Image 1 (cartoon, rainbow, N blue to C red):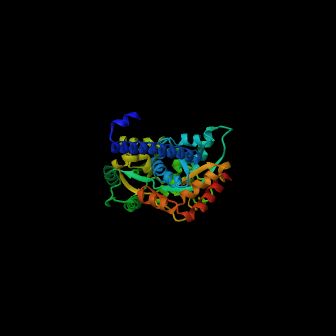
Image 2 (tube, rainbow, N blue to C red):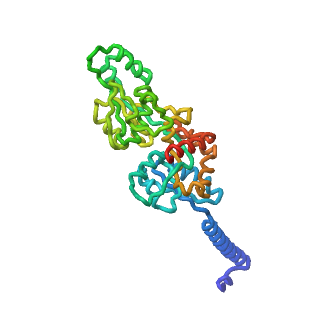
Image 3 (cartoon, one colour):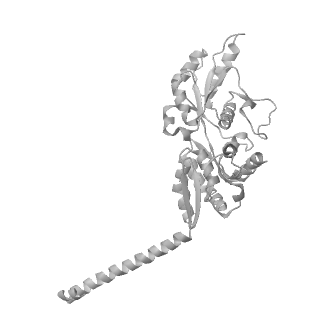
Length: 347
């Protein structure tokens, strides 16, 4: 430090003070970095997978900071719209403790299709939300229906459509060919049953008489399709809107708003699924849920996730942000729904 001799005493004091301050700040920075590194090493790590963009945003922007308050690091693996891949991750990646993008019906079906003897059984740890699947159309297709069935009723909503159908059937003469209302659905049996439950809710099709839907696992053959309704099928949920656009004879299609994404703006939402009040309704079988391997249901990490996902301010946030597309399961109904669905599909 001989170069300091060139400066006045006052200047040397100032320079020494600055030098010591810099050294002090460097030492403090090193201490903080070591402490943070130590804290990071001590943080409990939880890994979860999802294929849903809505859920990914919630997990990373809301749940991750919430868990960090308790020194828990949440790692989110996102596989956009690749639901089978996230279900496979739950089986194959020992660090993935849960998935949050599927209902148990789909998870079980994926497990069966994998045909892997090493696969482990899965169950619902906690229900999350029900998707308000939509009944989509275009104004031109509605006008087409009105002309086709010679309806004097202007069809603006589901009630108008029901009344127009009643008039059509009332005025129908024996042996008269009925122009059918064509509805496009996904051909996957699981998605098809959910679509049929939605159509049943609208009063357009019916369950077979005497069938106790809340106690049995439904299949598409359990529904009665009236003569004036024609079901058109497409294998992929992601291609439904394209098939609808390319076939002018189809009047409606059913899909998840989350699958449609921004493309839903191209269509008219005619009506949405009404969330039933009775939790025994089979529609609840299709609740998007926190799904885990059965052996992990009582693990500490699963308990941490369940507790965090029950926090009311997080539930309120999701309901408010996504009110048009989903409805969160109320805390007071969570355990009952989990128990009923697990018992139904694991018995």
